[in-house]
Image 1: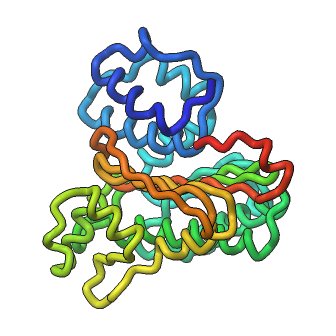
Image 2: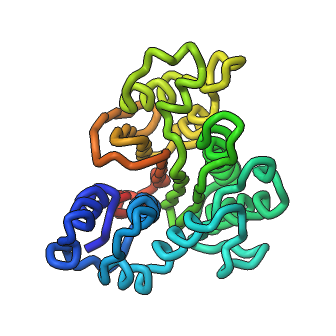
Amino acid sequence: MVLTLEMVDDIRELWLQGQLGKNVEHFHDITLGAAFELACCYCDIIKDKNPVPNIISQWMRRWPMFARACHCLENYGFENVSHSTLWSAPSWEICSAPVNGEVYGNGWELFQQRFSRSLQNNAFSRSLALALAGALAEMSDNISEHSAPQDSVSAHGIVGFHVSPYRATFSVADLGQGVLSSLRKNPKWLYLDNSADALLEAVWNGASARIQEQQGDGFAEVHKAVSQLNGSMRYRSGGSILSVQGNLSERNINRSFGTNLAGFQLTVLCCLDTPESNEIKKIF
């Protein structure tokens, strides 16, 4: 069984109840999105000096993607992934999110180029690869710009991708102030009083924390990049989850709730519309 995003909240609750080792299913792998949200749970729980269950330590040894996500979220500042060379095209890569003033540094540009190359090596066109890399960059910029209160340093964040033939996933996550607190810095959005409405306004209606902006364009870049793809987007902030599935002509939106998790998390899964991709199980 693969550990997916839908299972993360149950694992978090079992962990907090001290029942994780007794009641958890046997998982043989983990998706990128689940690795990111579980890493956020890990960092959120251990900050209160809660013990780490043996099963979590085993998963870290078994799944390099999960271990890397935890490491990068704990360690502040941008760094290139150690297992990847500068000009390679890895199947997956995770790094700490660039902090204030470093978003467009050389190391970050090379990271985006590796993502683009990995996509092109797995049947994505060059134009589509550049669009998806640009969408990932926009969401990483979101961490730098909006994860911390006014005049504070950006919260810890991570960015990453996982690419296979006809299929790609990218994720960003931070443990910052969340969408609601960010939007409420703008007087226009002071009336918002819950994460669910704030998430919908930011993701779907372009609400921005910047007072001088009429509309934010970061999420619009994500929607544009995946508009022609058969894909899914999952946005999370606080205990609220907004899921968007399908392509531009047939898109379904679903709002749900999970346990309260600090910051903001996004996972985007997209598949090329080919006979081969129809055989791919579309899971987060």
